[in-house]
Length: 128
Image 1 (cartoon, rainbow, N blue to C red):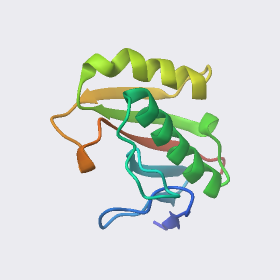
Image 2: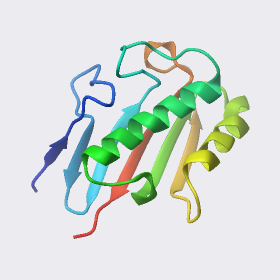
Image 3: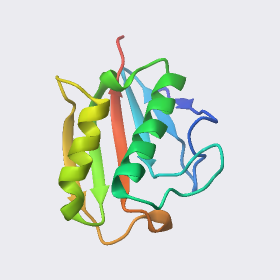
């Protein structure tokens, strides 16, 4: 199995021993992204809407580094510290994605890195 590492300065650098994304076969696995502004390194800690928008922007930057688009995402996993924010995240999603939507799981967790309220990971399809 071959692995190609995807990396861009337009998304936050890894905050641990992992890659921003890994391509293998026809899939690209994007590591969980948190709301960090890659230009400043600052954590976006304002509204859940602002956090979710930044996370999707970071995912989009990684997709672009892999010559892909958000529309190529086949699966998202969303981690929220409060499922009460589910509808707000859904609204943000409709601003960035259109039908056919990717498959998705949304999970409430007790905490996320850097004290953020949302983290999203993605699997991107890639033509052979």
